Length: 419
Image (cartoon, rainbow, N blue to C red; front, side, top):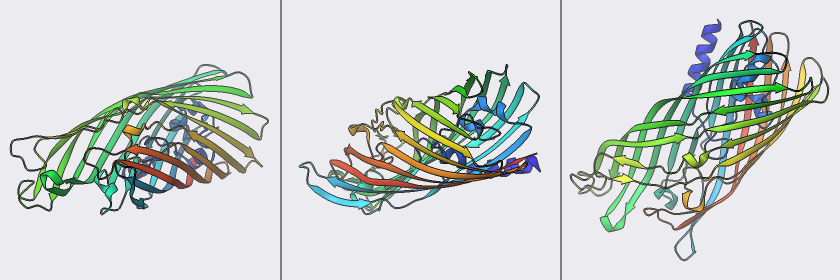
């Protein structure tokens, strides 16, 4: 039963569509309890999702525990486009393309000093879509990054104060980019689609220190992961004499480096019923300096010429701050609330309709029921995504863009069972 439960959870995490839930395309929604506390959940007791939030805290799990979590995210937003003179030439909104962030976790206590855990959850993912007939579609009308990390983890408790963990990360990325390609000077008016996937390895390490029964700190480091992505290229053109007689099919290649990050957390227990967590996350988004795609043939029908699609990003490193409160009304019922603030890492010259988001504020609440064997938690959240101004690229049908009134609806449920 245990093996079947875990296998089903891993399959669900791999197959489910994902959407972005934090600045850039990072995901923090790994459990309903984590959503409810704004992502500030590094020191939870008896929670298998500690594999994701803080591997050193799996030493707080007693016995053998399995957990699955499903988080629904629905992004909404508007935009305006401007020409070179600053005149508005189009206004519109995104096509609502909701998705799921799925997490599956297993933790087993080996003895009084050692624990093993494994999780399958998305660390990076996003999806965005705009009307295909819009001018925004010349930048991107459909973009999707499906991602999942599988993290086998070993943790050791040295004494009452110190615990630490180290783990590997097997990271999967599936990328799809679609846009309209309009080059009037070349008579090109068509669409391109790039679709591919990649697996890469990373690692993580974590440590907790308890000052006393009420105060504890923790640190988690996750390494950067470099993907060399090989993809299929499809070009469709309305001009039959271009793109190799109308359409082009070939190969594309690109490199994407997912950033490394640091989590620093603090936990304070006011009493046996109420505790407060503070968390700061430093993500080194400067690794996302460009999204350059290289083709093995011309996409505008020039024989013997291979082309590329360079796109400078030059994102800056950023911080995410979160605060979470948990209160136990009894041995069975608890309530949680949280708030998170994400800095914007996207510069004016590095923005696009793939990830058109500014700074973010997330407000969330949740509730939990548990008995000796089972735990069920639910959470609701609302993310104010903020505004973002960014420049158009050479092949875009606009000179600048303004994304505004953007928000994301969040709903999550988790189920955990002890064996």
